[in-house]
Amino acid sequence: MNSSDIRILIVDDEEDILEFVSYNLSKEGYQIKVASNGPDALEMVETFTPELIILDIMMPGMDGIEVCTAIRENPDLKNTLIVFLTARNESFTQVSALESGGDDYITKPVKPNVLKSRVKALIRRHYKFQNKNQKEVLVFDDLTIDREEFKVTVKGKEIGLAKKEFDLLNLLVSKPGKVFKRDEILRQVWGREVIVGDRTIDVHIRKVREKIGSDYIKTYKGVGYKFKF
Image (cartoon, rainbow, N blue to C red; front, top):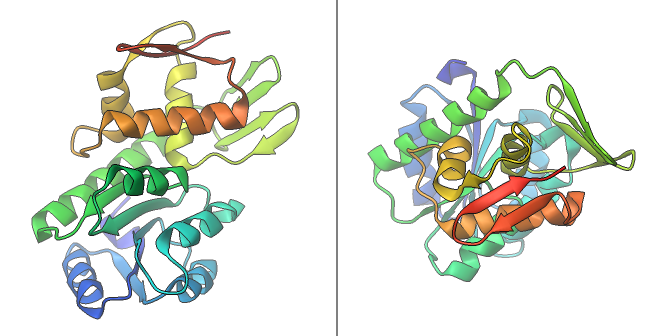
């Protein structure tokens, strides 16, 4: 997919940040819209349907965590990437961002070339997963995974997985019984260009377990995870 086909929504209450991010990403050919608060962003996604949302955390009234949570409740936006742009780098802030359904976070201040590189890497990996020839439906007891429609059901009930949660589960079920090492998971799901830590994997594993049940994914401490069936 060409950059001109990619829609990006930037949400921040600081006008200079909106100008900085939109200017640099517009030069890369992306379609850009901006919103200065959470309610406007939620209204805008209904018609703009972005492939990527760059979302500030600290906003008055409705913060980025609340906005992300609301977006993840919309099934039409289940494949939309959400990246937090934040001046706060405490681990609990990063965990909250990921737990709310975020795919990644970028710490302010960010240099233009770093911003463009991170966005490009996220989008490339996103469409690499989408374009794989994965038309089969996998069934494991009460768990069904439709890899073509990016749909997961448990006991016949569809559950909502964020994009990275689905990618993580998809990787593990690709070889049931194999122990995927942590560095391999990071490489396959997030890519080499995206810098994330071990906490990122742990948060996503926990979220997947909460949604599909704790029996399917086994932890090998200090090594990685495997899907058991």
